[in-house]
Image (cartoon, rainbow, N blue to C red; front, side, top):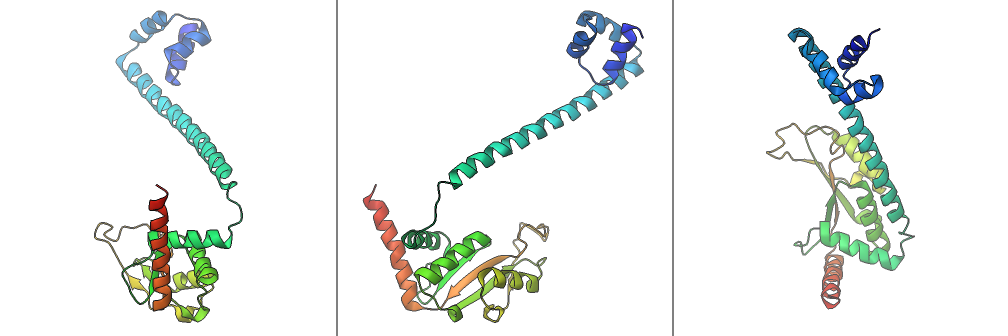
Length: 223
């Protein structure tokens, strides 16, 4: 096979002038002159092949880079995660108070309400309520906020099993749909909706508000 034929075939496969020049030991100026002598139809085909292969090559590179970046991020996260040891009761007290400060309702004088869709966060706040606040099991009242595409029975079963709170203590779910979503929300985006953990206890409510006040004061003092 002649060098010219090989070069044209390589061009059709999407190779660049630099790659062909290196493989066949041919000057780029020679390759360019060969390319110019082709018919417009052949030139158009070669350009389409090269664009197609360039896109394929770029996507392959981008995916490899994405995987590598993800692996590096996971290593950083794992290293950071290893610095967190077993949480003491004192630490649980502070973490739970901070969590409620961030995600809990703070205007109700008569009860607590913590809302979130993150299972791990719900487990942590439940541990705070049970071990620090000493909330009895029958004093939990659960409310689900769901989107129309979520199965209520499935969601209640999920949260009941996760929190170890009887399904009897779950109120009838509420359905909410933001104007922006227009019923286009992906089904698995919030597969079990948002859980509200409610505790009707005025004394405990103001204790938790006091914990938050203490955190605020401690933060100001240390600045």
